[in-house]
Structure formats: structure tokens, C-alpha cells
Image 1 (tube, rainbow, N blue to C red):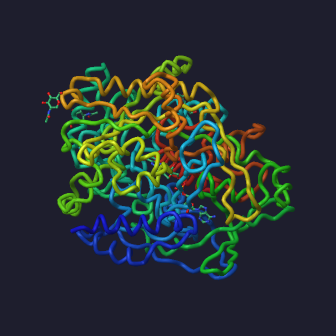
Image 2 (cartoon, rainbow, N blue to C red; image 1 turned 180 degrees about the vertical axis):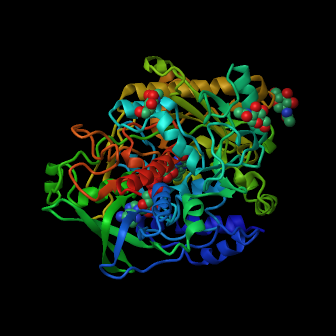
Image 3 (tube, rainbow, N blue to C red; image 1 turned 30 degrees about the vertical axis):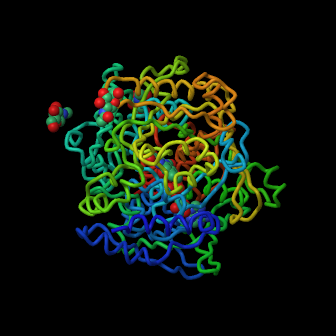
Length: 626
Ligand SMILES: Cc1cc2nc3c(=O)[nH]c(=O)nc-3n(C[C@H](O)[C@H](O)[C@H](O)COP(=O)(O)OP(=O)(O)OC[C@H]3O[C@@H](n4cnc5c(N)ncnc54)[C@H](O)[C@@H]3O)c2cc1C
Ligand SMILES: *[C@@H]1O[C@H](CO)[C@@H](O)[C@H](O)[C@H]1NC(C)=O
Ligand SMILES: *[C@@H]1O[C@H](CO)[C@@H](O)[C@H](O)[C@H]1NC(C)=O
Ligand SMILES: *[C@@H]1O[C@H](CO)[C@@H](O)[C@H](O)[C@H]1NC(C)=O
């Protein structure tokens, strides 16, 4: 029963090249996936059939991208029986491996990842390969909801009230809460009757059935420090909690599994996989979008939208598609040889969350932690097949805390966190197989210099507690590299450009130290592994200057990029789409995904994207009188 290790190695080996070259997932996985999903058989699940559109085939709606948002839209729009809907997705099927929650970090090494890199950074990713940050994005049915760490977190009410205050009518918290609830099937017994949660929706929300021993220590630590243990998607966000996850019986519940598979035989919904959209077709005179051009099996197709094209290609994909189709900053488009059709600030307002993930904490009892060796054990595999065990930990996360640093003092919303702590049941130090390293982009020499001194046994007794900057002030920008959609765009996230962001994350490091110092963790002698990071040795270990240096080296993105097609009212020069998500100045074209967020919420972004898609579908139905 070494299958987990074998699969891991196969995927890792396919890794880098596949992620860059965009090779399809091996079809062997489809067979294995059938096998694994077959027990117990769930009638909601099964592969979505592939549709091969004919040239100039007509649809009422064409949705581009089957990610967190696109899968929801395709389902909801095709609820109207006389609307014919086409969903186009560049990737293929999920597989049984991507279902395993703890292996989330490894999926970025497969061909399910577009494999974007940021431009070289001045203040971040400094010891990663070439000062660039890796920016994984899902290229698969389900999109980034297949690569993500499953964490279900909505944010603070004022995140949405702020959107409304920016002129986005219809988006305040009391108006969006019904859409969060609509999609939800809350499985956690004590939350099923909460007025903040929904039951009976498509998206299953559950706790990992695995109760990490660290979870108890985390809870005790929170209580010792005066923080409540609570539902952070309920009335109050601040406090400590066990992560809520998009999970069905211990396995990943992607939006593909939640929203597409149950309706895969709907007559009026067609899904075309391995279909890369090259361009939106827009009539230059009427400025109406009337279809898209895409590539499937090396052949070009045009398909026609009688009503609307809806872009759900994500923060990178949707912005890039608009730009190559002539919608964006006119000067920038001309410089790349794209004739401008509509001058809009596409690609501006890029926001993201970074986390400092280089630290490891050592305890004197390895049974507390889940590292490579535990995860790959036959016992863990057997438990997983029964829907239990450590492999069901969402991305390895066993605890979340939402807190406020001193920099939150200028936030008029009193209960809104600006810092999150994510406790991982394992750490970078326990990364024996080198997969986490590849995900982060940490070099082997860095790894061995920092963690090489630890005997393997000790490396397996380590866990992580990573601070995440959830109210960043730095703003980045996406620009075209070329007029071809196949060339990845320039992504300049500008991490830590605003010095307050670095200060806040350093305070986050101190918050973690206070959690580790509590009685519960000290029962196991918990301590920080204190080998200084290469390049920071000159600074006094544990000084503020040392942590600034360390943070700039190994902070990585939590992959929450948003904002490149910002929503705002007509007349707002920073806006790309209206509060009804229609592209300003054009007809027949909307954007509905993470890119429309005017300001990043203080949360993980998947749940907010699903909410956006639910609301978008309702607005489209209203606008067409349905
Ligand atoms: C590694 C990782 C971990 C994360 N962890 C979490 C987490 O734990 N919790 C959380 O809430 N959020 C997490 N996120 C973020 C969250 O998953 C995303 O914010 C969310 O999935 C974005 O949804 P989207 O619909 O905007 O884009 P996506 O889900 O990325 O969907 C875009 C889809 O469009 C397709 N596409 C793009 N361009 C084209 C084209 N030209 N032609 C055809 N198809 C195209 C893509 O293949 C993709 O399927 C994580 C993300 C990643 C990558
Ligand atoms: C949200 O909008 C609705 C409808 O416009 C309004 O009745 C309500 O008071 C608003 N809530 C807040 C908190 O602004
Ligand atoms: C929900 O159920 C729990 C018991 O499972 C109970 O303690 C709680 O008061 C109930 N809440 C509401 C709002 O009914
Ligand atoms: C772990 O360390 C603590 C504190 O130093 C000590 O009390 C405890 O006995 C140790 N446990 C084991 C299993 O070594």
C-alpha cells in the first residue's frame, strides 16, 4: 500500500514541465478516479460528458471558465429550460488524487495548474527561484476550487458593506448573505440551524472528520489568550476555530463536483473541456459581444452567443481575455498591437494575500503532527478510503485564528480582523519528498541550510503556524506580455510595497510566538526551530529586522488574487464592470469571478467567489425577465 507515495512521485515528476507546458492530466487517473469514487457510489457524482461544438453553433449564454464561479453560473443559468448554455474550460477532469484534502499543496505541481509566475519582486519571494513568486491557478473542471486548500471562509460583514459604500448597489452584507446561504449545504450538526448557514444547497461544507491533537492545544491557547472558539462565518469573525471546508464525506467538494456533476445530463447545458478561449468576439461598431473564438484539439472554433458571454476565467484569465480582445487601457493595448475597442482600467487593482510560511515548530511527540511519512502510511490511506483520518485535513490545516494587529486601529469596523493564523499539522521542515519546496519555490540549498541540521525523526515532529496578511494595503497590476492569450501576462503583485504590510505580518509572527508560548503547547515543549535563514544571518535572530528579512524571503501567496476587473458604478474611472457585472461601455458581456472584487475581503476567496456567481446568475435572470 505504497500508492500514495507512488502517485505523489509520478505527479511530482510530471511537475514543473507539465505545469508550464500545459500537458493534459493522464487519462489513467480517470480510471482510478472511477474506482475510488465508486465506493460508496454517490448519485450526484460522475464525469461530466464532453461536448464538441460545431463551428458557429449558437447558444443563449457562453460561460468562459469552469472554475469556482463558472461552474455555479453554468448550473444556475441552465435552470431556465429554454436557455441553451455552453461552458468552455481549458482543463479536463479532476482525479481521485485531487480529491484528497491534505494533498492540496501538491496539486500545483501537476498539469492542473496554469503555472503562472509573478514578475521579479523587490520585497518578496527573495530567496525563491529568481525572486519570482509562483502563482498557481486551476486549469481543470472546477478551476482553482480543485487546487485550493478547501478552507471555507466568507469574511467580515463590512467587507461587503464597503463594496456597497463604493457605489455598488445590491452588494451590502445583508444583500449578499442570502447568496452565501443559497449555495451551502452545511453538514456540521451544530451549525445546521444557524441563521448564518444554509442547508440543502449544492456546496457541502464540513469539518475534517480528523481531530488533530494540535486542535485541542490551539483551542486551549486561544482561551488562555482570551479569544473565543467559534464559527468565524457566524455573527463574529474574531477568534479561534477549526477550519470549515468544502468537503463531502472527507473528500474535496470542488465546484465541479458540487454544481456540474449533479446536472451533467441536463439537455440544455453543454460543457466543452480542453477548450482554450483565445478571444471574445465583439462587434466594433455596435460594441456588442456576440461570441468567442476557442481552440480544442488544435482546431479553432467560433461559437455564437445570442444573449451574453459571461467571463469566469478568474482574476488572471478574465483580465487577459478582455485585454487581448481590445478591452483595456488604450495605450497599453496599442503598444502590444491590439486595436483598442473600449478604454477601461483592466488589470489594475490587483490584490492578494501573502503568508509567511518558512517557520517550523518542534514538539517532543511526533504523534501530534502529520508530515510526509504519516500522510503516506498505509494506515492513513486505509482510513481515507473510509472517509476518515489525517488525509482529510484541508490542505493540512488544523486551526484558524482571526485577530487584529496594531495596524487595524484605523479600521472603522471594530470586529474586522487584519491577521489570520493558519496552523498546519505539518511543516516545511517535514517536507522529505521535496514537494512543498517545489510549491513554494524554495531552493534545495535553502532547505538544507535551514532544516538540514534536524534529524529526520525530529523533522516529523514539526508543525507550522503561518500568519496571513488579510487586509493588505499594497496593490499590484496585471499587464499583457503579448497579444496572444497563450503567453502568460506580466503579474506584478507589489507585495510589501506599502511598508505597513511588512509591519503587520511581523506582528503576525509575534502573535504566533504568543500562541506557541501558551501552557498547552508548552506541555509538549513546543519551540521555534531557530536556524537563521540564509541571507538574514547577519541580523540578530528574533529581532524585528531579522523577521523583516525572513518574511521578504519566504512569504508566499495564498493564491487569493482578486480585483483586475473591478466592479464600480458608471462614471467611476477605476471600474471595469458595473454593479450588475456588465462591462462598462459594451453590450452582451459580463464578468463574474474573483476579478470583480473592488477590495479583497478579510477571508479566503473561494466562498466569496461562489457567492458572486450565485448573485450574478440571479441578476442575469432578472435582466432577461426570468
Ligand atoms: C493553491 C491554491 C490554494 C487556495 N486555497 C484556498 C482556500 O483554502 N480557501 C479559499 O477560499 N480560497 C483558496 N484559494 C483561492 C480560491 O480557490 C480562488 O479565489 C477561487 O477559486 C477563484 O475562482 P474563480 O472562479 O475566480 O477562478 P478559477 O477558479 O481559477 O476559475 C477560472 C477557470 O477559468 C479557466 N480559464 C482561464 N482562462 C481560460 C481560457 N482562456 N479559456 C478557457 N478556460 C479558461 C481556468 O482553467 C479555470 O478553470 C486557493 C487558490 C489556490 C490556487
Ligand atoms: C443594505 O441594503 C438594503 C437595501 O438597499 C438596506 O435596506 C439595508 O439597510 C442595507 N444594510 C446596510 C447595513 O447598509
Ligand atoms: C441550534 O441547535 C443547538 C443544538 O444543536 C442549540 O444549542 C442552539 O440553541 C440552536 N440554535 C438556534 C438558533 O436554534
Ligand atoms: C515533553 O516536554 C515537556 C516539557 O519539557 C515534558 O514535560 C514532557 O514530559 C515531554 N514529553 C515527552 C513525551 O517527552
